[in-house]
Length: 569
Image (cartoon, rainbow, N blue to C red; front, side):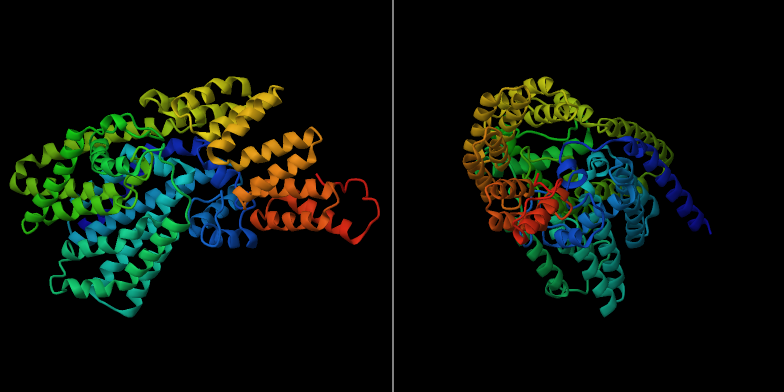
């Protein structure tokens, strides 16, 4: 009875603490940091659950690349469509779903750790350390980061199923493990190291000593095959990451430094931002060598101490393995959301180390309990403050500018936020600063072109659109140049730019619509219809291209003058 009451009270206290620490999330808005691209303005998401949207979710970046998807994550997109069905573009509902998933993840983790180890208070400490940490904010409060909390939900269910299978192997239980891993990979492919994590847990705390390494690998061969396939799809078919023009050699040298940065950020979470630029200043020889030696040294120490303190090795290698798929993939080599699963390993390491010490010094238990309460209170306050920086794009990027140096993404983000507020002239200096910090950022040139065009300076805008094209053959710049040429009456050059836009980005629905409209204006209805149909297939919810397709098809069937209101727009 005591254990049941203890579990109920601890669960209730943990849940209340999480909701209090993250409660402001439901007051936050969408931010122009991919939320618009992948959620709020995604033409495949904004109509809610539709058959066309579902087909897109399962095919985007698997059968074709889409600028509204960064890699194959159909389950994540389905949950976003469901949210859009329920809440529309009310950001509060989307944030609430992320928060609920984070709460469920915490409760699942508490149950999983307690079930595997039988150490309730160590499990509760590790779970609170994970769930209340300020580094969780980006994964929970950023709507785009749904993939992190959702994939972790299925990862924890997969580990729960693996524990059941390990204790009593049956075909049904193995099927559940495989299914949960598949659902996790369909949410975010970062889970590709999950089978290795299961091998770690087989060593401790499951203690499957009767299982040889060969048997353990053979038991999980389906999981390794699935994860390998997911990794290959992401690597070869997903959108390439931007690296600030950083050479591969420097990216690799940054890996040990990035691992150490994640540890330091976990120990002292200050200066957290939505984006970190590449840390050229940290790539000194002594720092790279020191980081590599520290990582290697602790790895050897943990392995040697495995018999006496297995939690050290399991927690440490949980951290190293789960971070491996994304280490160095961001420009700075670091992103707060990437630590969501890896820091569970560090929490396990610290929690069981503390429990081990309290067994040796039981007189310290009272002081340890007070210290833990103070720690979690401080973490909750810091987390709440970090959540509030995500209130809106302006708050988010102003904070990023204040805690980082030379953050060109923050400058560009502020410029974009001002454009969305209709303050185009005020946005210009931010884009100019972006170009000063990162001259090869084509989107900044494109946005300057947009601002100049709005200010009645089309010739100056053309220069920046052209520069964006020179830097990265930016499809949006081709599209805008096409519109400018069309407004000048130069339909031929307009069509040439529209063609380049769809050549550069075959799944650019707006450019397909513009190209079709321009071709239809010249009487090339058959080709126009072809582009309209592709536009409809790419963006089923894009009303304008559907309308233009219907009008063009009617005109193909009849030579008579279009009825009023049936013009292609």
